[in-house]
Structure formats: C-alpha cells, structure tokens
Image 1 (tube, rainbow, N blue to C red):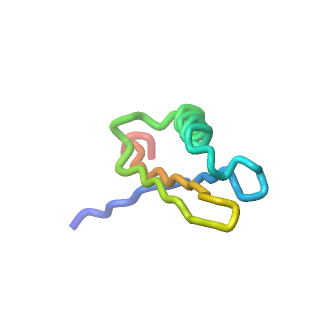
Image 2 (cartoon, rainbow, N blue to C red):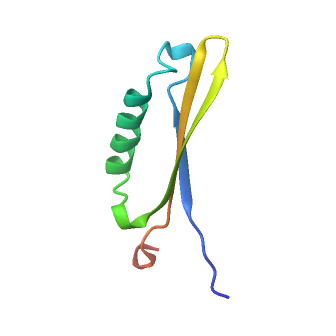
Length: 73
C-alpha cells in the first residue's frame, strides 16, 4: 500500500472575539487562508463545519484537509 498523507488547518472566530456566531465571516477567513496558502481546489480532500453551542450562542469552526500535489514535495 502506498503512503498517503494530508495537511489540515482549523479556524474559529473564537468566543472572546464577539463574532463566534458569524459563520459568513469565518468562511471568508477560510477562503482567504486557502488563497494565502495557495491550496488548489483539486487538492482539497474535505472541509468540515462544526458548531459548538455555548452559553453565548453558537461557536463555529471549520477544518480544511488537503493533499498537496506530490510534485511539490
């Protein structure tokens, strides 16, 4: 079996930010990070969106998993 690996990053607006429930803001930050890291669309394996319910309301988080092109190793 060939080795297989991926990278990932997770983002949240954070409870202390006052924007923990702002999903559109978080998704824009995710898009900005994808562009800044020069992750190509075909390299993305999965994107998960999760919400924790807190006393202050929902706190959203997003994790992006990707596998860079093997030619870039």
